Every structure is written in C-alpha cells, then in structure tokens.
Amino acid sequence: MTDPRPLTVLESAIRLATTGRLESESVLWALAASEILVLTPTQPVPSPETLQPLIVHRGDQSFAAVFTHTDRVAAEFGTGRAAVGLPASTLLRGLAPGIGVVVNPGTPLGFELPAEGLAGFVALLTQQDAAQVRYFVRYRNDGGAPVPFALLRRRTQDGIVTDEVLKDVDVWAPDRNGSVDRAIRFPLDSDLDEIDDARAREFLDMVSTRSYRPFRA
Image (cartoon, rainbow, N blue to C red; front, side, top):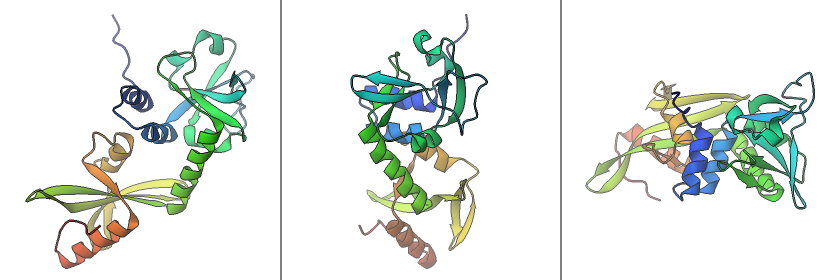
C-alpha cells in the first residue's frame, strides 16, 4: 500500500486555516510563495508567460483556477487540458481586473479569493517588492522579558532572493540553516518574529553597543 504524499506548504496552510489555527492572510502569503499548477486547454502547451488560465464562474464572479498538485485536479476540469507549473505570484500579478482566484476548485482542500480581495493582496505584494528587505529576530527570555539576540533578513533585488543572518554591525552572512525561509513558510512553527525597519535599526544599535534589551516600542 502506497503512503499518501505529504501535503504541500500551501495545502498545510489551507488545512490549518480551516481549523482556525492560521489566519487567512497567512494562507495568501503561502499561496504567493508557492509553485502552482494552471490548466490550459491549448496544445501545444504554452509557456508560463503566454498561458491563459482556466476561468471558472460562481454566479456573477469569475475566478482563475489554480491547483496545488495534479491529484487535486477534479476530472471535470482536467479532461482535455494540460497542467503548467509557475510561481503563484507571477499569476496573481498578471490576472486581468475583475478576475479572482480559486485554489483546488471541486475539492475540499481549497478556497476562493474574489477579485476585490485579490487586488488588495496584489497591492500588498507590490509594497513588499518595493520594501526589498524583510527583517526577523530571535528572542531569548531574560527575567520574563523577551530580549532580541539575533537578527536575520530577506533581501530581494532584481528578482533574486537572499536570506542572511547578522554577524556583526553591517556584517551579514548567508542563512545556511534556512531559518528565514521557514519563518515565512511556517510562521506558527518558527522561533523567529518579523519586525519592521525601525526595530531592525534599534537592534543594530544594540549590536554596536553590545547591550541588549527589550525593544522600546
């Protein structure tokens, strides 16, 4: 008997959200960070840049259908179509106005995001791209107070993602343990917390003085 395959990161996030253990916004970030499948009725199979995703309709709303795995493609959608894999963020940014997205339609492990909600989330993605850097800290307990003692970051430049850990003032080294990636993909299981630029600068000041304390704000 073959064991069932492990859930993908996105599938795990959807399952956690359905049980109330994960916020819906975290599921959207998991979607944006995932590779998804899109069905295309055309042959030969087009490139990700030129494909036209399958559109399904729910009343007066339209959704681009995407899938987390080939075994999530219901027969009603898959017959006569080919699956093309691409980064979900590429698809989300490229959808026409008025089109939402539905993940794994026809199966219990999925969700819908109407066009208005998708437009708002794509705006957040754009803001994240503009920011270029996301910071994360690891805390230790010092007399009951959380004191930051490690700073990590994710830099995005020209589409290239680099995860790093601070070694000293303005000295960064590769995050070889994958801590930042786990923090983004599995926020509930990570020992890192994301912080804003102001707190990152505050921590850098702590490093320069070799004096660590809880954040002021």
